[in-house]
Image 1 (tube, one colour):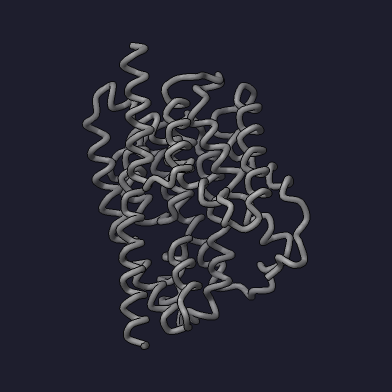
Image 2 (cartoon, rainbow over the protein chains, first blue to last red):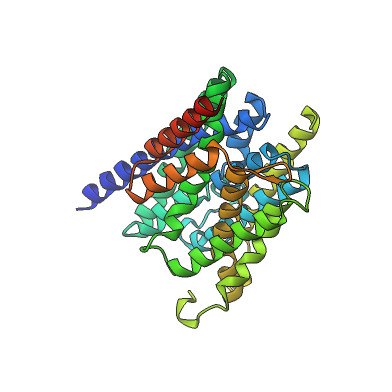
Length: 230
Length: 105
């Protein structure tokens, strides 16, 4: 039934948007903890709108990192959206500069996953736009809530927030390490390598730079496998 | 870092991330879909997110430190392994961090 598939797509897209909204509270709180004011936190959610990059940027700033390390880590994490765009381009086929510019803003993990999982092209497009709209709204509103909420915290609550930020990064990383992920053992090897490189460099480089340099751990992934090539 | 520098970081980072997205929709697929490019891009998040976990949980400036954050991280890992929802993972990690803070003064 096409209408069933349509409402299922809408339901999944909206459900995902609400779930992702919860990350926005954590992001807003993390941004406040890193010294960004509420306007800066909300501007990141409105203009950058790619969660892992935003978390990385405020994570590096929170660790005392400089501007280049903060922007560099955000950009490195943003590269996967380029690959998503390439995969989505034939499905979205955005006509005209304006529509393409608008679609590009919403090319993120969740919209790509929903669009690619849809049974056909039309539902894929619907999934992309509805997921994008729901997440965009939820993510920005909850960033505002998280940022304002964190500003009102005392010392014990601040200690709680300090523990929440690494936990939030772990929660972002976790699905990539699951047995159901593609090549989970390679992902785990690369993740372990990234953590070891970052900790080993911490005493020797300016804050935040160790995060950017941890990208060398990608070498542990080895050569592309011909079978895994799309 | 001054407010002006912070704004510059926010705006330059946002513009860069947007251009990365726009590039994907605009360039021929063959430019990006080379085996080694997709391989690197597929594994960058694991390396960087793990580095951020380590730095956020176990460092302060240039020192490696053990405090409530590491306890919170261990609790979060356990909760994730038990497939707890995101909000529960964060609440447990935060509670563990706050508890250590109260106990150790």
